[in-house]
Image (cartoon, rainbow, N blue to C red; front, side, top):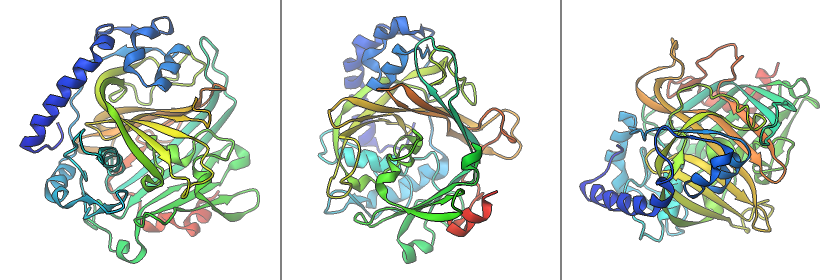
Length: 428
């Protein structure tokens, strides 16, 4: 169980009772050991986000598993205890003041008018990784998600490295807890994805993205295009949509857009199903929905915060979506599902996270072994529910040259890996 003060323990017990009472009609229809198919979708309709329910109706199957207790990494827990009391929202009610490391807001009160913004900042600085990440050789299949449709791959993308380096909130790898470069650059985090290894026409492509503490400064992003052998500067709009792929950078890990670009509203908390501890890594490509999801996979009842994000048009005028519904696991601080709605208010795109909780990514790992269990992303799927076009990603892809894939808080990357020069250099 994650860090709580004595007062918060009492509060969470009350919330759990309320949440359980709210979800009882849905829970009464499922029990541990049940196997849910499309024909039984109504049994889980009230305990799934609309996007996940859509997946079930289109052929995704679910195994109902016992609820697991997910502990935080001890260094992250210690940082929360040490620093969280000094964290608050700035007068603009959007940005943070006093954040150093750990979870910014371990005390969240449903009666707090700022609870939604605080939940999203907890997601930003979640315990999955606090320092750095190097995820290697993940592949994404493009398919159409449809009930009882055969698997037919329309496109495949293979990426050599997906990397993150956090300058603030570091708990395990020097420099701790803040990289000195932060005071010079004001950068909170760095993200890089390069090189693309497949398909052939995209081989060598890459992406770099910088996120800043200044709430009014947009992200800086660049891409390397192998066809022109040139670096191109990108605007923020292209991070959420604008290309042939369904997986946009703002979708990564569930929700990766800049928090300050949205007005957040708390819609409630509820016991809902989430896939947080899969036994199979990577998950099985679903054979009953055309390969657009993971199935069968273990889903368990989780305590979930439901948050609505409305784009601030003065910051992102060309945002494609009218609103976002983000379903955040209260214990893991990770997004389980993210549903995006079009300008007509209809569900447009849904993202689903499949996670696992263990001390190594694969049983025979030799390097990526941790002294405690931690949460890993196993698969992620972004689907256009209006057309059925789905991009299903494995982490790692089953045919990858190495299987350990996830190197979290191991110092596997540093700031030099997040430069345009490095992106160009690594292009094959």
